[in-house]
Length: 216
Length: 322
Image 1 (spheres, rainbow over the protein chains, first blue to last red):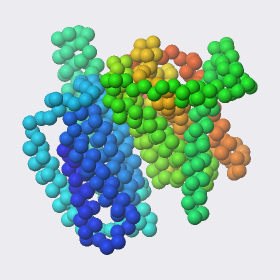
Image 2 (cartoon, chains in turn green, orange):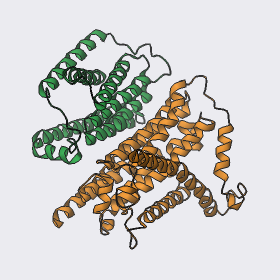
Image 3 (spheres, rainbow over the protein chains, first blue to last red):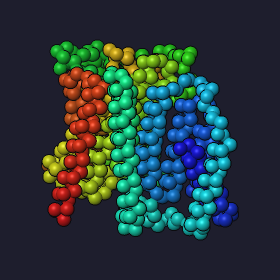
Image 4 (cartoon, rainbow over the protein chains, first blue to last red):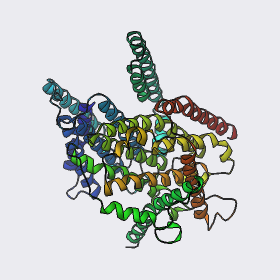
């Protein structure tokens, strides 16, 4: 998950740079703010994947995801920004911290926090970033948001385009989520049966149940 | 210049509300709890019925030494109270107390999502405190906080979505503009579920498992002293104000009232918020603490199905009246 987040932020930072170079000699305040927040987000994402302290990594992820929300706000997509905070900062990171605390979260450095896959991960991240940057730059090459007119990313506009033009992908996604839900329940049932067969009062059963509940 | 003044004035008003209302709720809790338990409560500080007790407490907290445990993660330990407190200040900005755009700190297009998102962030403060204290009891408190949040965030969101469906907008101001009196019976299930889930998110009794003093001392806040501890307490009471204000705005019609909604709408909002705050205190004195498994069971087997049923009902009625 973290390489993907890093790649996403990298994509953001680079598109800003491209727009900046292509744009005007006197960039507006919003553009400067966008660039600065992008840099902060990129930095936080880098620290997330490089720090040796597990819980710090999760907290830097909060900064990176919050920075992305600010970028959405600057692009006038208010609804998407708040949903980003609600889902990612409010739920996903809490679930992550919960998982870390349940398993292993020492204060200070974790000697085994670094895996041997460092270079492979870097390659995948760079490739993903390159692909995303290419797609985004190609799709929105000369698109500029008119900040003075009606907001282009308000809840009404987002809802209308989602349920008029993108209904099929939306429904397909919900089927995907349903499949994940059913899968999580099946997995937890199996794990529970296995643990109750091994030890009747093992706490593992409750743990898996909680994980499933989180996945919902 | 006029705009700057306007913004400054709004921020100032919200800040003053943020500083005073939690104290008023706290003092009310002292007195109401005392009278419900057949005693007087604070009587000496300030003279008249101990009105200055919380100010005296604040002075005491400020004088205490600010201790950071030797084994703790220093920076996160010190940052946690701010993370717990500030979200409630931001949420107060978006709650409208009267009709029109003059009676809200900032009109937001997606107000419902804003308040729920930012309230969810506040829980990160408890998690950070629980982990960074390097204390087993704190860590257990943090774990319980996280489990509770994950369980109760969903019913809260679903019931808020039900109101948004009824009003046809996710803006808090827009929801109040669309409100009719018969929404009250229509959305009553949602209101109850929202309020109960909100109590659980604030870790108020009977949902105070994360800070259960007879088991884990004071949960995530065990190692805190002085001003930082006071900030966590302030966050709890600010949370009560925010939750009661939100329930008022979403389900009880905010500034709508039987009469006088034009000039005195804000009185209705404050009155409803105050009554709800009283109910919060009442529940604390009345019910024993839920066990962790009862807590999870209540959310997943009762509140989530109820909120889904509420959404179905809202959808059906909405289609019928159109």
